[in-house]
Length: 326
Image 1 (cartoon, rainbow, N blue to C red):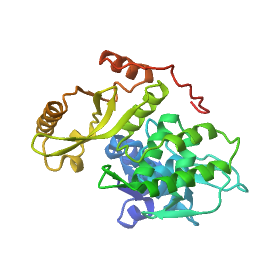
Image 2 (tube, rainbow, N blue to C red):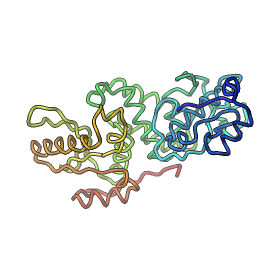
Image 3 (cartoon, rainbow, N blue to C red):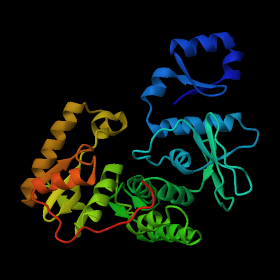
Image 4 (spheres, helix red, strand yellow):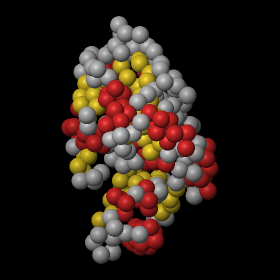
């Protein structure tokens, strides 16, 4: 998303009166003091895009480069913010000796921190593992797992999700567990421990992460992930899940809407291709294949009801997982 600093606009002849008029007319959005974005683009942007824009604006406005943390750092790293509310502020570190404050477009957190940061596209942020830790302990369990899965996938997955470097995955898991061990009793630490145990580099989307979380919470074990199937013509497929002998896939809208994922195909062609793929998988495997979307993942009970209609039921008591955050 393109943002504009006031000083740059003034250099091209835009006056403060012009900016006030453009904001009043709804043509531009003031995202923080002295920084603007096109209103329609801002309204249409995902929370991740807005957080990145706010981080860039905070960096541009600062004398000393700030360090993004929590959800803002996750967005800077390109990690998903699953159902994390857009609060319109950049989350920055102030360190233990600073004061935790909130202003119009910035929240400064007094988090204990080792001082290590990385620069990503012009913004300083907490390291990847520290970012996962912070989101895991401050966001919902679903948001934390989606973020952690995306991070460990980036670290360890090769050839998309078909091949995993187990050594790299375990190294990242160990780094997260070591960080957790430094914060006994901290807010959200139970969530963080659970996420460190179950995060999986084979997950390829937040929808898959949340599906797996609901399966674990519901006591549905022995779930296959990225199940290989060889089609009738020798083509190799990977199905998201195998649950009690039933193949299952999370069907996200991105494959139909995102031009980068469509690979030049129209949404209609993608539907046809998916139907052919599904028919091939069913034909060679002899198994049913079910699909679900974020509508079925609106809650764990909604997902369980959907699975129940497909003949999939928990075979043991629901696993109780205490959460420290909402």
